[in-house]
Each structure stands twice: as structure tokens, then as C-alpha cells.
Length: 363
Ligand code: NAD
Ligand code: MN
Image 1 (cartoon, rainbow, N blue to C red):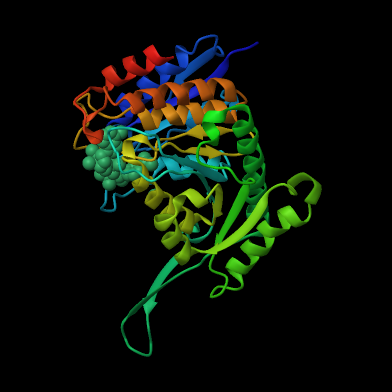
Image 2 (cartoon, protein in one colour; image 1 turned 180 degrees about the horizontal axis):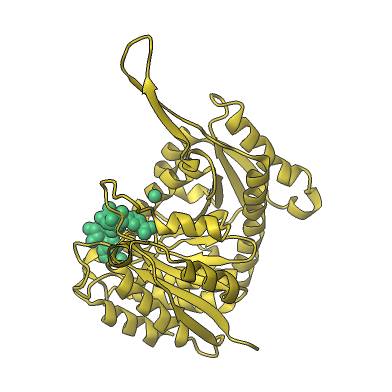
């Protein structure tokens, strides 16, 4: 079999520390797939050197040669810098990565003893909603003061494809639970998709979202008949997530709601340093830890590599190697569970390299 070609884009800050860690684990998988890694440029540091944050060569190589990629993190300046725009947003667009998939799973660990038990998968629409950035500001003629507007786009096309992914992932999670008792520890019901919206207020935009995602099941009853479907208004979604996070399986949401609820969910499982994501399209997938470039700890060798390693596992899962992904998750979970080798964000004293070595031993 020809090797899997993976683009590595460490970009800025601790991206340069956690992406090599993830690469090392991918290369060390027992009987794992063969990989060919290509190092690619992007990021704010690259912008400062060259005037571009995302060189065309990176896009071209990803599109024409790679099956997937791993992205580290970018340091986006909080003030406006002429000519700069975020390479990660651009990559999602260029590669048509229409879903951002974020598993949020608790692992029993002495590092966070009072953790809630949950195993949810949040799927966030990744291409539209308020993130089309169609904003304008003008002077309100009535008051003489400034007024700003934003357009929000919800399309049947985008809602249907991300909704279909949600139902498919509910089925594949169920299959994994049947194969592995360890994965059944929290979820014992039928697979379930929770559709998040606010169509009681925004009946046209969120109404279209709700109807379109519902229709995915309603029009494919033989395929998705075993998947329960429920709806949750986004405000009470937040309430329920903090009160009873164990009652969710797959959650699917428009871009902005998905962004907000998934960051909130990450707070339920310990540290930003452990939460992975994958940007998924029909022909390409890019793993990406949820955290940023962490300038406060960059260069110290103490960044938690687990979010990046789990993102590499997600990448494998979506590239058709769920068994290897599963080995990687198990090794990470074993290290968290024995709590001996943890980076400072989890209350430990270990370095990035020591955590990588501990995970390697569990493999
Ligand atoms: P951040 O995620 O970089 O850091 C927040 C806090 O969490 C910091 O204290 C940091 O030390 C800690 N942290 C994050 N990841 C960690 C890890 N793997 N191990 C241990 N500790 C970790 O968020 P921020 O400080 O708000 O942003 C810093 C920069 O990152 C900004 O320039 C921001 O624009 C950028 N950012 C990028 C992305 C991305 O690339 N997708 C996402 C968020 C923020
Ligand atoms: Mn966010």
C-alpha cells in the first residue's frame, strides 16, 4: 500500500512543540500505516518574515499531494495588522473542510478527581453562519450614532451535509461502542443526535437549519432509524450541558453556537491542552488541537502534547484507520488515568517529551 501523505503545519508557538510530538507517535504505532510527512509553512511568524501567512505552495501541496494534515496553532494578533488574515480560516475554506468535529471525553484521572462523566461529540458547521464576515457599520440617521450589522448565512446545502455527517457519526460511534466495552462506559442508550438551534426566535435562518437537519433522518428512515433525534434551543443547551453533560451523544450546531458550546464543553474535562478537533471535508481532513499558540509557555518544553496527539488520532479515524486511532486514544487515556506523568497544566511536573515517552510506553 502506498504511504499516507500527511502535511504538517506546526505554525507558531507551542505548535512547533506539539506537532513533532504527534508525528513521533504516529510513526511509532505498532503495525501502523506507513506515513510520508511533508513540512509546510504558515502562521504569523512566517507572515512577519515573508508578508504572507499562508503561502500558495502550502495550499497546492495539501491539495495535490496530501490525504490529510495536522495543524498546530497560529498567534493571531489582537490588533489589526495590514495584509494579515488567519491561515486556519483560509485553509478550511480552500480545502472545503465543512465540519469541525470535537470529541469531548472525560477520562478518570487523579489530576481532576471531580470531573463530570461525559463522552460527547460536537459537530460544528465550519463554513457559514455569522462567520461569512459580512459586516458593515454606518451612522444611524435617527440617533446620529454608529450602528453595525452582520449577515448570517444558513444554506440547505451546508446544513444537509453537516447534518448527514452527524447521523453517520452517531452510527459509527455506536459500532465502536459495540466493539469495545471500554467505550460503553458512559453511553448506554440508542445513538442520538441533538440538533442545536434558536428557531423560536430566528424562524427563517435557524428554522431552515432545523428543518434541513431533521429531514436527513426523516428522508432516510431505513438508514438512520436506529438513531434518536432530539432538539435543544442553544441557551438551554448550555444549561443542560453544565447540569447533565452525560446526556449527550452527538451534538450538531451552526458555526457560532458550535464554537461557543464546544469551548464550554472543553472546560468540563480538565485542560485546553487535552481537547482535539478535526476539520473534515469529503476529500480531506485536518487535525488541529483546540488550543492556541500559548505564548506564555512556548519554548519551555512543557506544553501538553495530548490535544495534538488526540488530533492525530482523529485524523487517523477519518482516514479509515479507526483501529490505530483507538490504540492511540487508549495509550493517552492510560497515561492520564495513572496520573504519574502530567504536564503543569494538569497539575504535574513533567515535560512534553516525558509525556510523549510515557504514551509511547503504553503503546
Ligand atoms: P491559548 O490556547 O494559546 O492559551 C490559553 C492558556 O492555556 C494559556 O495559559 C496557555 O499556556 C494554556 N495552554 C494552551 N494550550 C496548552 C497546552 N497544550 N499545554 C499547556 N497549556 C496550554 O489561548 P490564548 O492565550 O487566548 O491565545 C494565544 C494565541 O493563540 C493568540 O494569538 C490567539 O490568537 C491564538 N489562538 C489560535 C488558535 C488556533 O490556532 N486555532 C486558537 C486559539 C487561540
Ligand atoms: Mn473557539
